[in-house]
Image 1 (cartoon, helix red, strand yellow):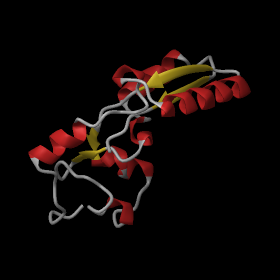
Image 2 (cartoon, rainbow, N blue to C red):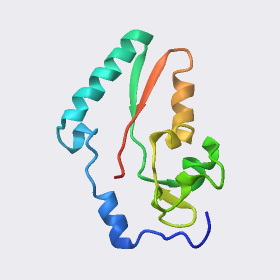
Image 3 (cartoon, one colour):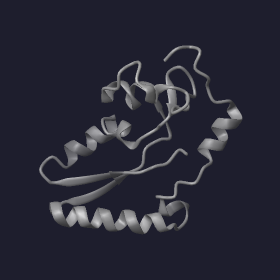
Image 4 (tube, rainbow, N blue to C red):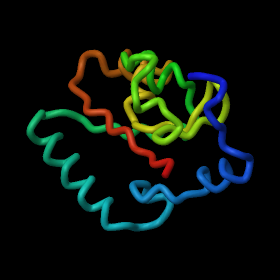
Length: 126
């Protein structure tokens, strides 16, 4: 990312971090939770597997969100129009998969290596 890409101001960051995660029952009920629960239940039945929920942080390293997932350095998704940068190395997560290979996920994989597990990762940063 070039240094000319704008970063969120402290007020913008507070506002973004304060947005409610509609998928999280801990933040209140919402209809989207019914859809998610039904989809998760159907996948669990179809794949005969245990379900585990993982809710990651909202601010993540740019490397986890893009580099480690194979996005090209010049990919349009990295532009400030689509990405909200906190600093040159940190950003608001733009999709959940960026948390998949974190140390916590590695521990989860080791714990469940002998079982089939569907790991549901959910969080919204607006």
